[in-house]
Figure 1 (cartoon, rainbow, N blue to C red):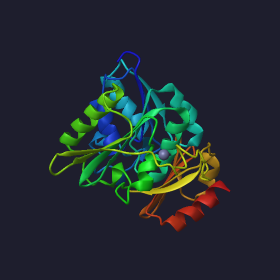
Figure 2: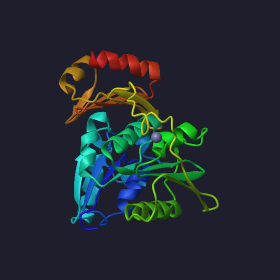
Figure 3: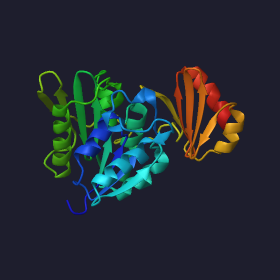
Length: 296
Ligand SMILES: [Zn+2]
């Protein structure tokens, strides 16, 4: 795959395992994630096990440091933030978009980007019972299946409580390579049962009412979004924030280079200079009011 390039969005349990499994396959790999490694989101993510937790480190910088030493032939590009609509242009630099994010909101933004930028993509999710892959290449988009899934599409990768199994990882990697090599059509969904190892495959029809791929209506969600996932509540401001100013607002917070950490008993807020917030232990209401306090 001489000039192949792939954009990996979300490197939690499944995304990081894919990165490790596909070393040397692509010429260029872009990696998007705004997460910062913390004690409470590591139990199911063996990839980050040897990370030093004393200082906040972004998943992306840790991953690329680890993989870069094993793979010098591939060009890795780091995007240490959550993917938002203002990142659509970046998709142009890649042949294939891989969505390993852990929530529907992010998936819908990535889906919209694939449709708008004319990019093929694979949407990956894993829960306790099954792994699900959706292949998009024109035609039916991820929003089409979501509209017709009757609850079958679950939140995403990090809803699992253990590391992904070897069987599933082999299925995942092989299927992504096959799709990339044009051996799998778009508009297809494959469900891998973790119990029986059987694969259920079906074709998805484009929904004539789909706002994204048929009607091309942009919904009102801005670049900013608040999402709830297993590691906490995430918010992407979509632009840089002044950590020094925030550190004076949040009494007792500590600055670590490009990150600000605020600990309050069992609750914490991690803020990156890129404008990504991770709230742990807070309710949605508390997170929202703290946010408006921080960014007003
Ligand atoms: Zn659609």
